[in-house]
Image 1 (cartoon, rainbow, N blue to C red):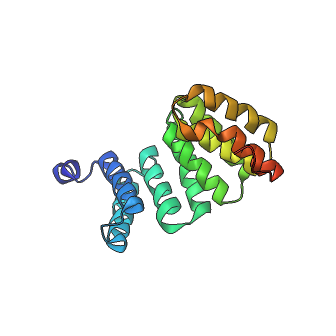
Image 2 (cartoon, rainbow, N blue to C red; image 1 turned 30 degrees about the vertical axis):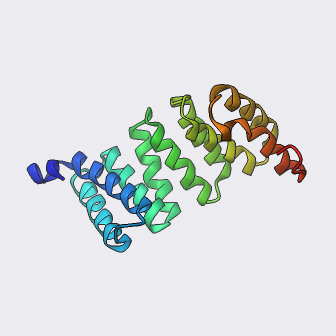
Length: 178
């Protein structure tokens, strides 16, 4: 807020403010959702007006489309443009994976989730995104291998430790491995 107050034409600051507001709006249980959602949309729109080709502005509008408007085709378009401009940002690919999945492009979701995980292999959230996408597309052998890798890679994470058993229960319907 201070950056856009100091320089109202600073497109990157508007984009980052939109991302911040989107996170607050998405996660809030205390603040007025409708008010913050409107504020987030306005800030993202301002970022696009000032920097229509700025990847961060496209990311901000993609996040608004994904998390607030549930306009998944628009989210895919915006987040794809953001990913092209920020090819080493795992957060962009993680959100793109979600947008693709919600749009019904599950193979694309696997691809984007894998890119996020490749960029930040120490992040459980990205590993889980790949795992979940693989299960949805029924690529169970790859999901099994990833579950074993996740258990080894994240030894203190209970969810990672039980991925393989949960997968087998999903595939077979037998809950005894859990």
